[in-house]
Image (tube, rainbow, N blue to C red; front, top):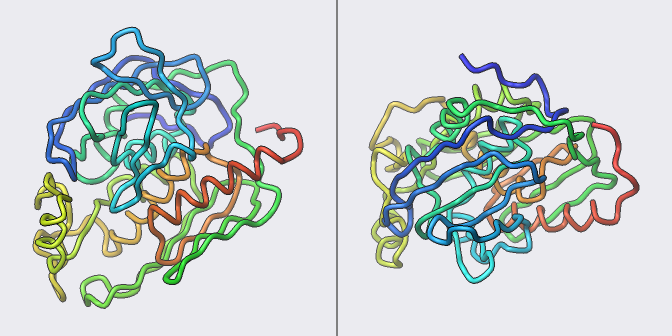
Length: 289
């Protein structure tokens, strides 16, 4: 069994390369992704079909689309559905890694972050001498739209929470929060799968979305029941919302803050990530991790 860090105090990369392949959620295309150890801070993206090209650091400003996933415009190329992978990296404590991709999306795998966690575990973690850049948020930040909001307030350690509300009886109202540690992420959040509504499937596919979605990689709610039970948790949908929230915030790192999302979305999450990035850029000197 992998020994995950007790907290997010250290700087970590992978001890070895690891590669996974799978279908893209929206494109339906076959996608391949390789994770490589890196001595450079942050998450950097390059392409498997551009050998020798420089990997580019990821940042909230690269977000170009937030319809049912987070997509990034990195240089001249676009990569969609990055949130589950980034949640797995941030959640397990990996602070720096090089990501190389072939295809338009990150592979969906089983619709959760668990296959990425397993891949990270198989590669192993390598501690680095550098001090972890876990920056302290110094003022509250809230972003909102007509249906929901996401707020972040300063806190000694990361804490995430979310609330969702659906008319479908199988989902209804759900609330979940946790003090985030690598062990808590792996046990409580990583296995939670993406979900959708049966009533929206035909419309989304007609719009060119969820072409790779299937009952083995997404939970599908049909009013009072699930088409593909059992759930991994009774409140799996809200836990997956926290997974998405973490993955989107990973674009700005993992600041020491308490974050709560009510009816969150990738647009709200990434708007918050941009606002946090701006606030941290104006913040005083970094505190020790």
